[in-house]
Length: 212
Image (cartoon, rainbow, N blue to C red; front, side, top):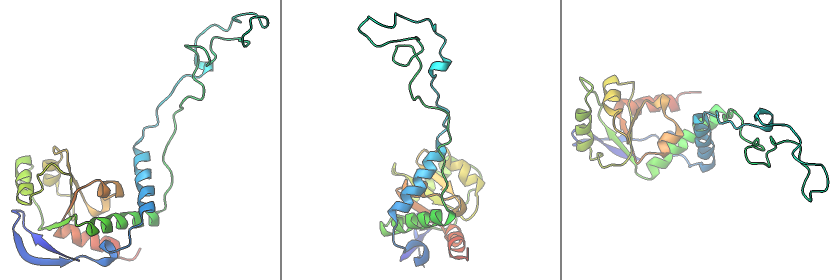
């Protein structure tokens, strides 16, 4: 697949770059992507939810009524979960929701996400983006030139951490900036346009085509 390279003003430079089939031309594995996204979301959970069980409730343990003859079930404590104000039965406990996922599985998931974006025509290439100072207005001007300031989500991939670009984009709710090493399947699937700089594409090729 060939893509045209644009400058930061949104003008076609006349150059085209061929995307590697080893990264952007693979068969999409939806199940593996689901597993990777599931693990990502699980790792975001704090797991600090907690409810009191009957042993933690401060209520009387005096027997409420006589054992027999009332026509109802026997009861010996107001701490029981069957009473209002009693402990919660099988309530949540603090826990870690994370689970293990093999590195090769995560790699296949990310490559599947990249291939899916390429297949859907959601990838754009731009010359290297750099700013002399962190300024959101300047970054928005770049998005305007590329016709990406349209209220949709954009994921910008740079070759290395561009501090001024990161600082300029962090106030924009629908824009994410990442390096190839920091890419994850969730962010790739949660974007409308994957904007890759030339340095970012070179870094991607080096990361995923090099020997494991």
